[in-house]
Amino acid sequence: MYKFLKRKSIPVKHCLGHYSLIISLNAIVVRTAGHQFMKTQVAIIGAGPSGLLLGRLLELQGIDNIIIETKSPDYVLSRIRAGVLEQGTQMLMREAQVGQRMDSEGHVHEGFALSFLGRLERIDIKALTGGKTVMVYGQTEVTKDLMDARNLSGATSFYEADEVTLHDFYSDKPSVSFLSNGQRLTVECDYIAGCDGFHGVARKSIPSEAIRLFERVYPFGWLGILSRTPPVSEELIYANHERGFALCSMRSSMLSRYYVQCSLDDKVENWSDQRFWDELRLRLPEAAAQSLITGPSIEKSIAPLRSFVAEPMQFGQLFLVGDAAHIVPPTGAKGLNLAASDVYTLYNILRKRYKENRLDLLTKYSEICLRRIWKAERFSWWMTSILHKFSDDAFNQRIQEAELDYYTSSLAGQTTVAENYVGLPYEAVE
Ligand code: RFL
Ligand code: PHB
Image (cartoon, rainbow, N blue to C red; front, top):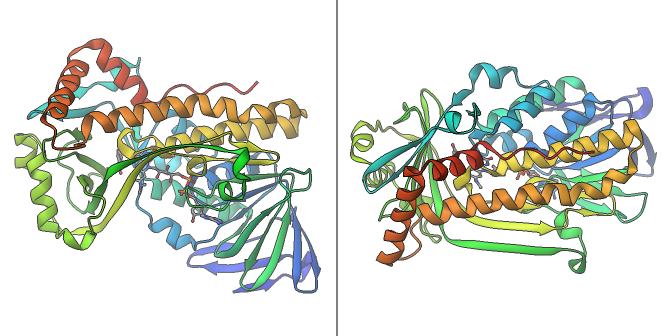
């Protein structure tokens, strides 16, 4: 699958699916008996939304970077995940010059609904936040737009890399080594961005005494399906019900995404489409249940729910970004958006480091990111705790209903929900 360009001995990986990999001419390759060394400014581990967005923004500033990813592009694109983009995430997509499809095909949402006790209460996020909205545009599409742009620009990426290993990130000569199609490669760099998700190698490479982990694992999961059916409602519905949580979301006017809370040991095989639709209907208010249009699922998966934060997020020349550093339960729609705000911070720090020689900003990364992360962790934990069934305890159910009643009937309550949902402001890097 790899071929070598005669010119400058630059390796070029040809077409992976419809994604070809072209090497940027800034990357210098030195070959010594079966081992190749390349140089770049920023080595990015992981081609999820964090890695691709960071790579793209840096590339537009002329900051050379190489992305190293363990999976294939098609595999990365097959993961169905987030659907709701905050305004900050949209702004970054536009800054990365990949916002055109999002702006034409994404759907602006001015509100969403909370349902409980058979009631449906709208949170008018636009009116409550002075005009802010969110965009429904799938993570798959975000990733595809970023991959396409990178592919066109000729920036370097290695997919299906094995044995990705970080070296010497506490020194000023960090590097990342990996096997690419059987060939050993080492990328020497100034900085490493660990954008490799919760299960990645970057966080695991940090000595345990240098990192503190905070975690809460929830005693349930989300069973999600995607179906080519019109969404039950124009806006998202988050439902609290005695039988458990349900969420009605969408990707477009003919593509729906629904979730129901399930037990942690549940299996997708236990859930026929019919069982899923029946359970979803039971958890929705009457009018929504009656107008629900069902159809065959085209994807069905179970995701566990977790809150997790690693502190700090910088270790010498290594920066953790996105899910590599923190996880939120999806109830607040914050995971991808938090990844984007980390990218914003790191991108601006690196831009000022290279363009203005602002070395002092590098050590500010963790503190700037963590202030926003903990607030999003709090909101996601809170949304999870008021909407899910934690036990058969009827007292707990009544407290949740009272809390939902209070928050949806008080203007102050609605405002706090709305301003967290649209996304708290980004902190300036200066
Ligand atoms: P990702 O997307 O996990 O990407 C990490 C990439 O790193 C690769 N990798 C490695 N590469 C090299 N070497 C290694 N050793 C590696 N190990 C792993 C992986 O293959 C992968 O390609 O992390 P990133 O980029 O930080 O992005 C984070 C988001 O994906 C995540 O936070 C969101 O999907 C969370 N999330 C949601 N976020 C939102 O903002 N709004 C939502 O509406 C929303 N809904 C959701 C969600 C997550 C869900 N699941 C499945 C957990 C709904 C669900 C159901
Ligand atoms: C989704 O559409 O997948 C989605 C939307 C909102 C959430 C979580 C997931 O809070």
